[in-house]
Length: 121
Image (cartoon, rainbow, N blue to C red; front, side, top):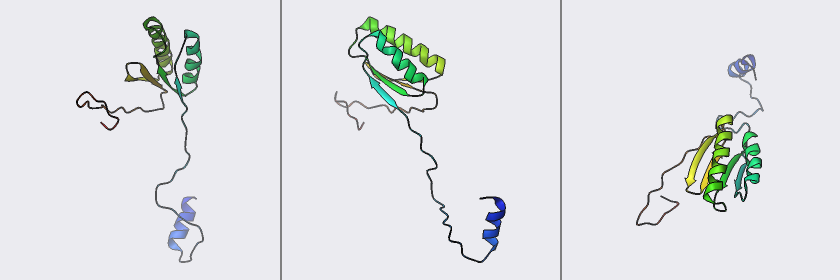
């Protein structure tokens, strides 16, 4: 709708059948693929890097690997993250989130009460 039509509707007294919504609208929703992976060997990580470079977020769980392989995977994915300007967020000691540049990540700090961790804080 251009300016002329908008002005004509404002100044004309006749009713129009067209509905106009003044509230919030969803124009186009995007989507984000989040891959949750547990690597078992270094060869698994190449697919994770390809996914990160194509715009997917990757959550990597390091439970199934030893410390040396964990460091190697960590270094490789951090290098890829640097190249594509992705962010890296630590979820816990064995879980990292690699998010593409266009994705914002806000992390709340969880308060610990009496040694019990809670999702509610």
